[in-house]
Amino acid sequence: MDKLFTASHHAHMLSVVLLILGQFWYFSFKNESDFIRFYRKIGIMLLVQNVFLGMVIFTGLLMLAVTKFSVWNLEIVLMIFLAVGIIVHQILINKRRKGITTTDTTAQEAYKAWVAKVMGAEIGAEIVVYASALVLH
Image 1 (cartoon, rainbow, N blue to C red):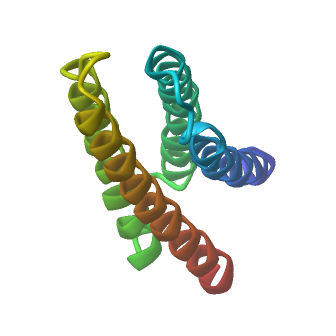
Image 2 (spheres, rainbow, N blue to C red; image 1 turned 180 degrees about the vertical axis):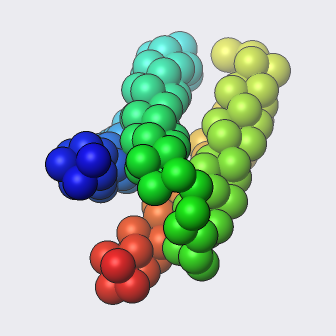
């Protein structure tokens, strides 16, 4: 069981790093002038992030199951709240994206700015939780 926990822990940390890098990906194309290409890229980015988020949640649950749900501390609670917050933000990002037309440039720019703030907040929260997990563990 110790090997399973160690492998799950490494996979969990790797998937968290991949999730953070996937969120940084938004900043590489946020200034895209063509909204149709931007729309497609953010759709692909959200799919990739959902895969990484699923990996994070699965490996986290696997580690909790290996410990028989007996280990509960502040970092685990923060990780659960952060995962729920990311899921809610992903839903809101996708929902707001669908209502924007290609002719409404003010809504497009407002959406891009809002998504940048959301991604920045998520990245900051993930880095804080990741660093606290490394320090407290």
